[in-house]
Length: 338
Image (cartoon, rainbow, N blue to C red; front, side, top):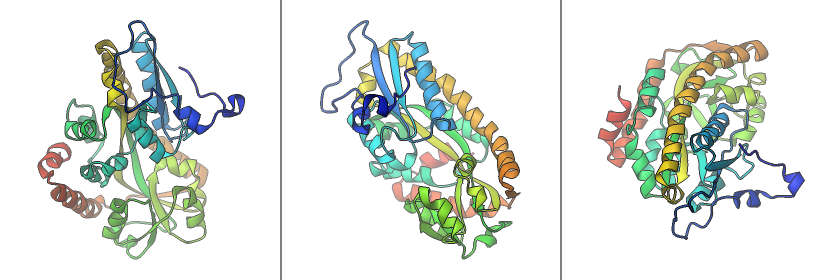
């Protein structure tokens, strides 16, 4: 596996990193010359030691292995090739070949993806794995991406659970009534907080620690590993294990680039996906217990176990409303109703 070389060593800029990609979106896709090594670029904003970044790196390694070195990957992590927005645009244009992305970005071209930003899509690990590991279960959404903006889904990643961290204990949904909670920029998350009775405030992720510390907000919803990485446990004492989201992430490839590969190389990508996806999604569920122990031992965080039934009921109203608005009630029921 090639690794990202220090920008100080070569004086490279972020733009030049992106320029390592395979090229010109306006050009016609063409199959690689026989015997020529195919060089691909993959990128994510996730830190190199995070599970999501490691899953992308493992995928790239396994593609190289399955192709007997006919494909070589350069993997950029930690946002070194651009922020989430620029990575998304770069994989569409073909300047980057593969990225890990949250489904929220795909709603820009296909508003149907807003339903994937709602909570309690999955009941548990078994349900999650039955959806992502079953071939064609998410084909409706995959087909939308191929059609517009031209992205091929090559692997799913995720399985990390998201919970609510706060300066006050949450024993029931009523404890959120009137509380000021941090939200990301999506309207879907803002509406979710309102449905729970909270007052959401849009705050950049990099400012969450200070916002909680200074009392601008009383809490946030995040994955357990993010709470550890960002040290939120230093400014908030409680985590309600709502498990409202099991992260569903897409590893997508520029479809023209994918179609330019011969069938053997496409098969290598598919085989690598099957092996790495199952392994790293399983790791994500195993990591939850480890992260809980870290938050308790290192930060003194106290976990609460609120009754999830009312959380689920209020959250799924949002899922149903978006599905109805987009006319995809049958697709959503088929995929997510166990």
